[in-house]
Image (tube, rainbow, N blue to C red; front, top):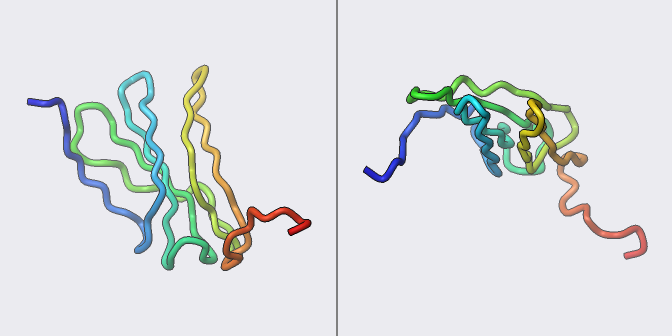
Length: 105
């Protein structure tokens, strides 16, 4: 056996993208990703989080942790440090397209 494990995860919305995984000290895996009714950049695109406890084969139901109408949440990153699980992500006005241009361009 190669040590791989399979576990079922049901996404909360139709469009899902950009996952981040972090393992906690007790062995729990935590996943965060953006999920919405429409594609990336759409209004209401949420950041959701689910957990896979050790020795289980099913993720917890994904919980919405960040959602704002008129905005799209994107690109979550999980980071565990000093007994705290941090979640960082970007947010932009919905349907704004790329917004990384400088003000002088």
